[in-house]
Image (cartoon, rainbow, N blue to C red; front, side, top):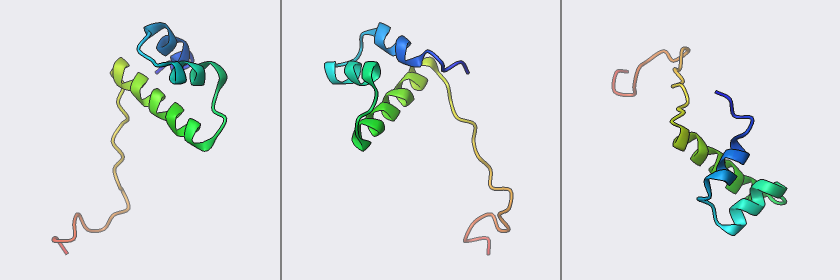
Length: 68
């Protein structure tokens, strides 16, 4: 996945409000801004069709509580 230009791609898509475009241009200034920026990144990934690979717990002894 080439996510180097995700900010530029979102800015070019013009689906952002004023706050979001300012955030992408100038970066996060607070913790809530960083959360919002992360949400924008996840939105970009969803628009592009990228999915995170599933994480399997290899060290788990039992498969569920009810199998115990």
